[in-house]
Length: 532
Image (cartoon, rainbow, N blue to C red; front, top):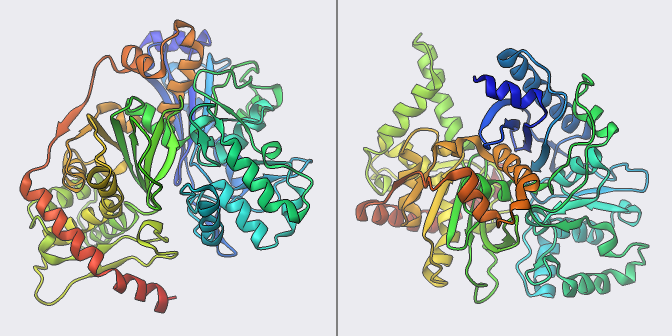
């Protein structure tokens, strides 16, 4: 750790990015060259309460404070100093969901996360009304479903926001949201870079008979693009973030963003014809488009980059959870044998062995559905492994089938973009837990998408680094660079990462696997129906 980093922190020139992921809250401190110099984290888990996935308000604040305390501890250990002031702060979190508040700033219903799939009726009605695909997890779907359900709290809403928007509001007093995260609340008009006025008007007319005192635009956060002023850390906000009381108020914050936007930034994929795939607890691909798609698709969500370009997003609720659970079984077996366990080694051995299996997994199929998967039409999920007596059942094929399953649904959605819409991409970058074992997740994804996949050394820094870069852009945007040019020039310096292209055999193998997978989906549907 260099003395320069110590000087940067001591002089208040370090920039802080914090991201609330599904299983971890992470903080990253970066220097003036946008390189990480300290980090902190906090593990957390969602809870299933009354049939809905949620995190409590206490869990949110305890998690944030513990994560920041862990960052302070890292700074203290490595540099022997306290963080007293910062140059800029950015807050990011999992997108979408539903956080509704009354005029006393009290939450009116438990936070409903992106993971909930109970909004089918609302999403279908709004998609028809707006002539635009409205996904189940979007805030507007949650709001309209609450109205359809006759939920008492709806009449008292004065503010509706996402998790990132909520934290930012509490730290700054500002009810704002970055355009990328806002595009997961309600569709954005690419010309005005604000909520679609037509859709706002249609929604107000739709719910007018209910007689609510609010209009939609009055309860939504103000939309901001990357580089715009989003307020300052207040005295109260500083105390909420740093319970030790060392952090001073007055730091500017960039617009709060969703994890999709920070993933684009962290992989230098905000330019048109670039894309990225985030693969962890859930997975999603983001392809930045040159033009709008020819029509709406239920499997594809239209969102935006943090600076407002249209993005085709394929979002899957499940990715590595089932894969990790099976690796956990092998860990238990190793412990039973009395062999010391190094989880990186366990993952490495199993993943590398998987690639020696048959390109089509020998007929084996896995469904990694811990929760429902809208793209394949399932409101609930049951993790399953399926084989027939004639399939080639061995360890390599078994592990390979689970690696394929982790990006199987992602492939189904992206096939529409590449095969039907003929979307062109110059570069797709992978990031997230699936790519931690070098080269393997990359090869699997390349076969799934029939496209070369790049992984950067920095991709492991993830969304917390991405939102720190957006905070850096806020205070350095006086150079008048676009966000894409700022990232190219000041952050990545032309580094495109290490690229792996798929072989014809791997592509054909994955295609054969996915046909089996789609044909056997009724087995998964039956499991949901009969296994409670």
